[in-house]
Image (cartoon, rainbow, N blue to C red; front, top):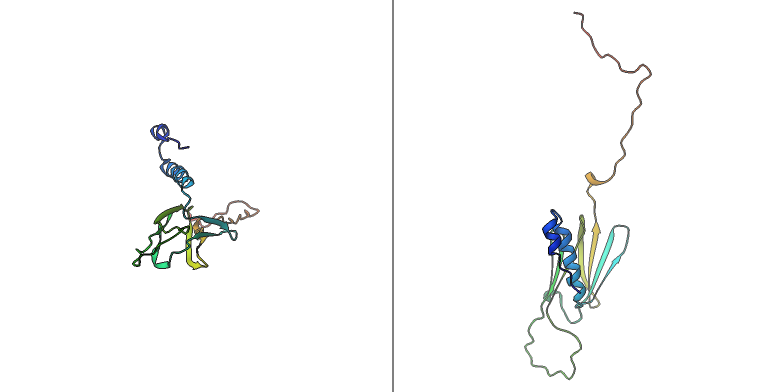
Length: 151
């Protein structure tokens, strides 16, 4: 089931990113290839594991642009003519996108046992982290006069 966001586009301002995320969620729920897992491996660490049986690292491209991680795969054309009696391992091209939250960065990617494993980490900039503000105590005499000149 797909939703039409057009009525909301006409009556809202500044929610473009929200509607783009909702569209992306709708679209990706309809796609099932390649299968993947997303797991939390720590407080601010995540891992995406994508099953890429039959693909080599040269046939896969991983791109990060703004808050979108794009994974594309293109199988190289087979030069020898094989005759398959049954072909259960898919060799089709694909493009899968993941929308990342603000301050989530890709730390690395590796192939391991037919899985592409992508390590992610949320790194909040120091300026955005909560900080404690020191509260000073006023002296017992109240405000002080620093300097005065006779008139």
